[in-house]
Figure 1 (cartoon, rainbow, N blue to C red):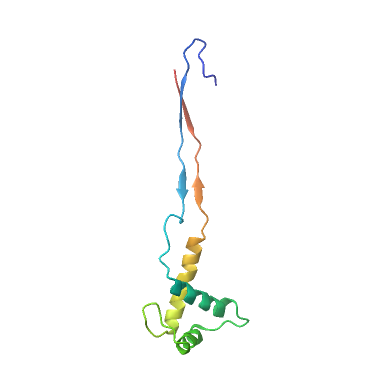
Figure 2: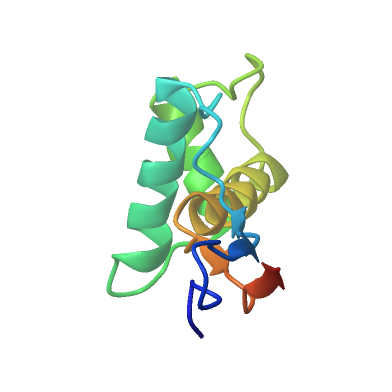
Length: 111
């Protein structure tokens, strides 16, 4: 495609394109240091032990250590399960790859 029409009049070319970016990196986490600490400890018991420890036993360990839930309650197995489950979901969301889509550009020539 030539930018000149043979005379001294240049052609006008319009290029139209769009970019779509989906990311989770535009907002800050509202996870407290204490919530992160609890999640990390639960992961150590569940994933890094030779024999994983159950939620009930983890809640007993936390209660013996004097730890409370983020809302200040005594730990139960359901609290431990909830922190672990939601922490895994959060970790997956935060570490998700960005999605960038660039469709074929449209080129218009105006004479």
